[in-house]
Length: 235
Ligand SMILES: C[S@@+](CC[C@H](N)C(=O)[O-])C[C@H]1O[C@@H](n2cnc3c(N)ncnc32)[C@H](O)[C@@H]1O
Image (cartoon, rainbow, N blue to C red; front, side):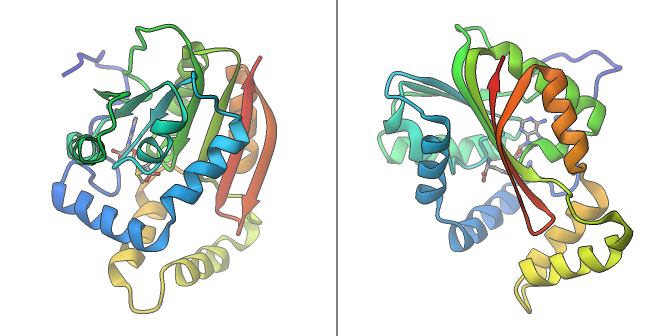
C-alpha cells in the first residue's frame, strides 16, 4: 500500500458507494452491463480523442474495465489505475479472459498514482473524479496534466451539475426518478448516495479547474443537467 502524508485526502477510503466490497462491485458490473453499451462508449471516446494504434493511455478509475477492455486492441498500451482492489481484480480477470496482454494494472488513484513511464498520449477517466472533494480534484487534474505529453488528450466524463441551482430540489428528484427506472430500488439508492455523500461539482467549477490545471477544453457536452463530457488538450 502506498504511504500517504497525514494531511492528504485518503482516496483509498471509499466515499459513498463502497467499491472495496466485492458484492458491490458485482452489482455494479451487472447493472452497468444492462444499461450501458461499453463497446459503443469506448469507440466514441477513441474517436473523440483520436487514439492511434501506438498510443499509450491511462484509464484513471478504470473500474471493471468498461473502457480498458474495449480500447486495448485500438492502442499500444493501457495503464489501468484504480483504488479498489475488488474492481481491479475483476478488470484483470476480464482482460485475462479476453487474452488482452497490453494492460498494466495499478492499485492507486488520482492522488497517489506515480506514472514512472514516459508521459502518455491520452488519459481517460469516466465516472470517477466525483470521489474527490473539489480542492483534491484540482490537485488530481494538475497531477494528470503532468502525466500527459504536450498536446496529449484528456477525456473526462462524470456527474457534474449544470442545472439551475435555484431549483435544485426539483431537479434532483426529477433526475433520480428519471435515471433510476421505476421499482429499481438499488439503483435509486446509488443515486441518493451519490447526491448526499459523493463530491460532484458544478460545471463552472470543473471548467475553471481544467483550465488552471493546464488543459484547454476542445469540446464539452452537458446532458440532463447532471452528466458532463469534456475533451481536452494539454497545452
Ligand atoms: C463508478 S466507477 C466507474 C468505473 C469505470 N470508469 C466505468 O466507466 O465503469 C468509479 C471507479 O472510480 C474508482 N475510484 C474512486 N476513487 C478513486 C480515486 N481517487 N482514484 C482512482 N479511482 C478512484 C472506484 O474504485 C471505481 O472503480
